[in-house]
Image (cartoon, rainbow, N blue to C red; front, side, top):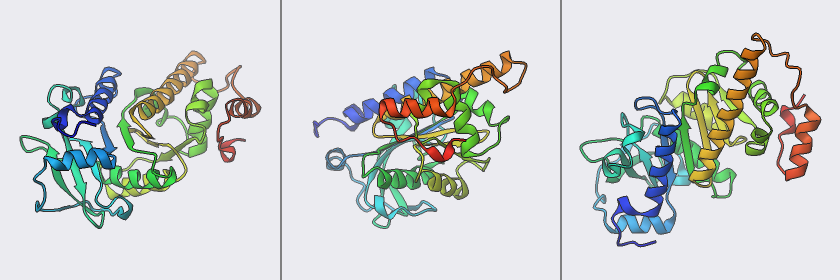
Length: 281
């Protein structure tokens, strides 16, 4: 990485902005909806710190604590900002925050020009990046929260359990079980940005790569930007197919054709996937 480049031109910022652009074009980010975070590598963090004067800046409390991420730098979207504007002005729409030695506070290192602040979901991002990093041996670096329409619609219709939501999606489209063989966690509706939502999600992220927020959207993790984006896309595509099939079947879930448990196991065997057997019938 070129540590002499302006932060906004560094490769990880370009990848971050690229995901923002795609998510906006997919229609998942109405107004200022949705948010994204990325945990910088040590090399990337060193390059950012070289040009930073954040040392001595006041710490702001997070409301949650993630000691395993103490001292980490996170690139995050801004509160009230529109993802569609990230490519035009990353230094205004995005920011890099440093976590305190205790992992319970943050301070600005770069970005958020014109008085911006991190997303209101920063507590959820910090807690869940910590959990996913531990669960993946440090591999997970991205958390992406989007508002895919068909998945949100499903949460108005189906029982809000991990099993009920996951099985409907797995049975709707072959690629969904390939994209998320561990399944999906589900959190009933909670106030956005609350510690309650962050803590409920973090418990589920110990098992799952993605968590559904009822009447709200999807929170997905990934080792990189492509993995996180692809997971959201696959889940939403399966949700769209489920909704289409149900509407074509007069609202009934009694579908003539679907993928049964043996079929799901066969897919997992063929592609050597860690299928979550606890979610099957």
